[in-house]
Amino acid sequence: MNQKKISGDVYSPSQQVIDKAHVKDWNKLNNSAFENYLDFWEKEANELHWFKKWDKVLDDSNKPFFKWFTNAEVNIVYNCLDRHCETPRRNKLALLWEGEKGEFRGFSYFALKRETCRTANVLKSLGVKKGDRVTIYMGRIPELLISMLACARIGAIHSVVYGGFTVEALHERLEDSQSKVLIVADGSYQRGKIVPLKSIADEALQRAATVESVLVVKRTGEPINMEPGRDMWLHELLALPIANSTCSIEIMDAEDPLFMLYTSGTTGKPKAILHTHGGYMVGTYSTLKYVFDIHDEDRYWCAADPGWITGHSYIVYGPLLNGATSFMYEGAPTFPYPNRWWQMIEKYGINILYTAPTAIRGLMRFGEAWPNRHDLSSLRLLGSVGEPINPEAWKWYHRVIGKDKCPIMDTWWQTETGMFMITPMPCVDLKPGSATRPFPGIEMDILNEQGESVKPNEVGNLVIKTPWPSIMRTIYNDPDRFVQQYWSKYPGMYLTGDSARRDEDGYIWVIGRVDDVIKVSGYRLGTAEVESALVSHPAVAEAAAIGLPHDIKGNAIYTYVILKSSVVKHDKLIEELRQHVSHELGPIAKPEHIEFVESLPKTRSGKIMRRVLRARALGEELKDLSTLEE
Ligand code: WT7
Image (cartoon, rainbow, N blue to C red):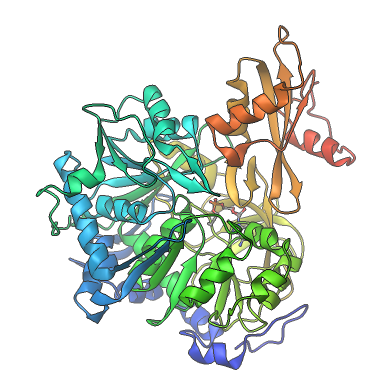
């Protein structure tokens, strides 16, 4: 309950929602967390299991390389699985899964622990040890979760590559992480078609040298190539005596790496964001508990992909840490019909649905009749993530899906933050399009170029001032880039790369990226990645990519290409280039638009001026061209 009356288009939660919520008074929690945020996090950490407790909650003696829960011993998997197996939750469903073809699989906490141990034993038999990197590449199937947990159980660092990425994206990630093992599915289902993941991986592996063993999960059963001495079927190894159902857990230092996850940045190749066992665990546990208000009887569905941070934090780790029942669906929202999601909400009695604005806009397009055919009354809370949600989509989601009774948790965060940073809780008054205020104990600000806080409703750079437990620890293999990219514009503060404004009530309205990151359907892509995929085609001399507004995707990729002088333009070339990007990077990176140009606007130092291209494409007037060379 908010003491102060807030202004604008406000949606207050019902008393019923508040009565059920863990947090009934946001201000009270926020005030106490603000007084001493270390006490707040320590209390949260104490709800979890540690083999040995910490000396200090936070060690900030070597900023920005923060350490949380110093000298503590822990393993996140113990808290995700073993801890619940010692209680009646042992027989509770941890994971409910539906395949695109309608198959169903369910795992109790006991079963998920058993399968995790079995796969962990297989990894051990291949020589995987603490600190080794393992890349995981598959669709949304239970083996993806099990593989992640198996790695973490034995202290290996997982690197999940989104199953929608293709050859070059996978190659780069294998190479940069120096992975010893790749766990891959033979293929995945996407809208009734098969994505040949193993053959994409074969091509990537020809370019990458470090992988010694490839474990193949059978999903589609289509014929694939198996390289003798390198490739093995996982199910065959799981049938051997080595794959027994107990596997001792590796005791980790709280600061030991748990996983790396690649994300797009402003320059060149994607960067590996590194998260740890201790702090990441506390952050994801606590934020999910308070924001999605997890109760034992809930069935929670985060419809993201485990290949992105949303899936890591809020399909895998957060829900398991909370002992929740998590639902995962393999396929696309509108396959075979636009009611697929609504059908599953009815069938499984889902209480909490967490998705992205692009999915909502995509479903909205098909009209209300599809959801209205289904009983959605089990829903209590809704969520949104990935990009700003336009008020029109917010209201549709609230009215048509939530029947005006489910508050929408619009959560702002990043791969780098590991957990929700700006977010409401069920008891908070909402304004459509605003992620509301920072999570308790976290101080954020909006600054102008001089580093001063802007006035209400003025736009500036969004920064974070207080450290939090699940903050990325570094960029794997590139600590300098970590410091330079996030901590150098405003010394001592974390730069988010987003612009935002704050209204009179302190509500934050995130506008979007201010760097060269494009959010396409909520997926994060770098202009540099799209450009280098284009340039790797023999016909292309130079390329520039920008993001432009798109009704459903939020942003669409527009590209400008200079062809090599020897190349003759022909009708099919545009389609060929689009296919090439899709083959190298993935279908999500396929440019919406390709235009052949003779030159590109550049600064004197040779940087492409994307804002000039953007202004031209939008028909806007160009301001300040003083740095333009050509
Ligand atoms: C960027 C981070 C972390 C979850 C998935 C995205 C944008 C994310 C919101 C939101 C407005 C949002 C920001 C951010 N973003 N959530 N609720 N409202 N913008 O993670 O791929 O690391 O992307 O997504 O621009 O910087 P990511």
